[in-house]
Image (cartoon, rainbow, N blue to C red; front, side):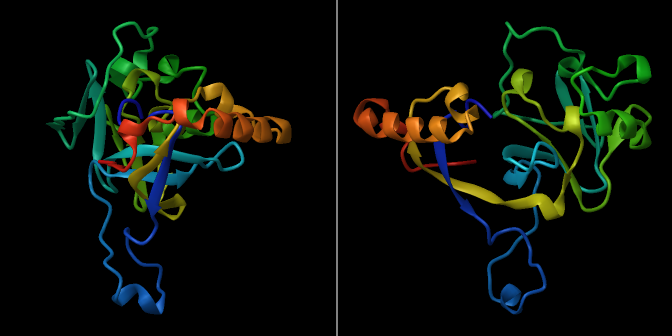
Length: 209
């Protein structure tokens, strides 16, 4: 999601914003539907359900395609001031055109389940988003493993919307990918020791949009 979000950003998430679940308090809470462009936090459907943060591009019933790095929804070219393209990124056909036209254009880094399903949702060169699902992409388009590669985000997997960065610490992806007990403890200790110098003070309390 760079540059919107950086590795080491800690987010306050509003879990009471996107629609009700049939509880008695649904009528009094300020719920709203999910909109195009919303940044969402959701449980990734694979890899033991880690939390992902992406931006909603397609709503249920939308038709999505990418042509020459430009995203189109329902035939309309999107204006995306948040999207970042890296001119030095390695070539990947899905960065330029999506969906694939045939099985020969499937990529090896696609989630296997999605590779077998994608053509069931592809019509006239567009992906049709099914009911209760969303097409999500990262803002860092050339370095984002998103719906292009693993499929849709189910409504039940969406936990909420990030509201504000309450703390941001200079970190690497390697630090956050180490899920071992020793790695977790070591990361906490290192963060506390270097808290003043590694904290990105200019990102504190920045709203997410």
